[in-house]
Image (cartoon, helix red, strand yellow):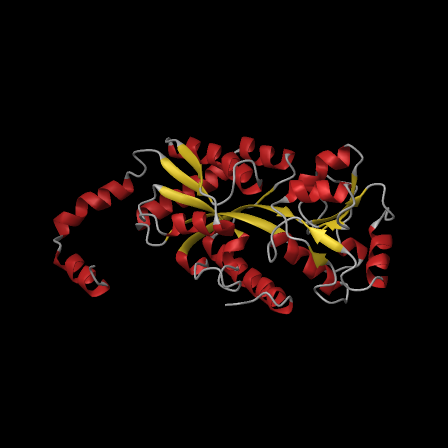
Length: 326
C-alpha cells in the first residue's frame, strides 16, 4: 500500500507537462455518462427527487446522468459508494439527512466530512397524520389527548428507530413540553407499511411525509392534522403548520447533491454551475412542486452551515432518546 507521504512524493516528482493532460481533461468534463448514486430503494422519496433532478442536470451537461440505487445498511452502503468513488466527477450522489447520524448511532464513521457538500436539492416536511375515523379531527384535540395520556400509550411509525420521522416525533413531543419518547416508536420499513398500520388502528400517528399519506388522505382513510414545515405545503393548502398552531418545531427531511472529496477544481466548478442551471429548469422545479416536494438550491457554504446546525439538533435528540452510541 502506498502511504500518503509516498503519494505526495510521487506527485512532486511528476513534471508540469505530465499534469497538463489531466487539467485539460478536467476542463472538458464530462466526456462520458455520469453516475448518480441513490442510497435508498427505487420509488422512495430520495429516488424520486434524484431522478427529477437528474433530468435537468443531464440537459445542462450534455451527457446522460444514470441514477443507480445502492441500498443497504440504513443508507450506509450507498453513501459509502459515493464517498469511496474516484474523485473525477463521474460518480456523484444524493446525500440524505441520515448521513449526519451514522456515527452518533454507532453505525459507521461515515459522515459529512467524507463528502464535498454541494447543495440541498429538495426538502420534504414531516407531518402529523392520524386515522380519519379516529377521535382527533384537528391538531388541538390530538395534542390534548397526547398530553393527557401516559407516556408510551401513543405510538408512532414510519421509519427505523432513530430515523428521520422518529426524530420528527421526538422533536414534536419536546416542543410541546413533554419527554422526547412520549410517542413510543414502532420501527418500520418505510411509510407505506406504517400508513397501512395506521389505517388498521395499529399505531396512533404517522409522522412521516404528508406526500406519502396523500393517496390515503384523498381516499378519506387518513387525516393530515399539521405539517412540520416553515410554511403550508402546496399539496395541502388547508393544513396548518405547527408554528401556526403555537408549537415551535419544524422538521424537513432533505436530499442533496454530494460528491467524493477531492474533485479537480474545474470539474467541481463546472458541476456546480450545471447543477444550479439544471435545478432551475422549469420542468424540474414544477415537477417537484406538483408532487409536493419543495425544491432548494444554495451555495456549498450555506449547505455546510445548514448540515452543522442540523447535526446538532439531531444529535441532541438521539442522546435524549438514549440512542446515541458514537
